[in-house]
Image: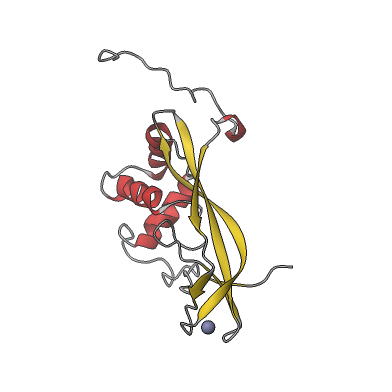
Length: 172
Ligand SMILES: [Zn+2]
């Protein structure tokens, strides 16, 4: 083990291009089902197709690399309601989010509880957890949490409301 005060060179020192960052370790996860209950009417809906979603998680410090979850997720069609919806993965992340709950709560904690400025929190997440989050994204999370905002700006409604049904339009 290294003694106290020994200088450990950060492997990312001097890196300015995002493409030069260490490649993430990819962990497969599955939320792939044949049938799921429709979120609107509750009828069982067949799988229509399978989509893949990548979520950035807190990194793997043992191997000093970022960690991505590659989630295969079934998309279902309810013929009764004529809607498409994804299998639930709310245990991992919010709909449409690119980061896991773990990353979001860590980032918000750094700002709200530890009082770090956004840029410092962003750097801290990279240095200690190997997850790259732009500081503006952290700012959005904190403001959406409403914990730090003293007095809401404007109406306080960002229009980024998260639909509970995760409706998906069939892309062409
Ligand atoms: Zn339905």
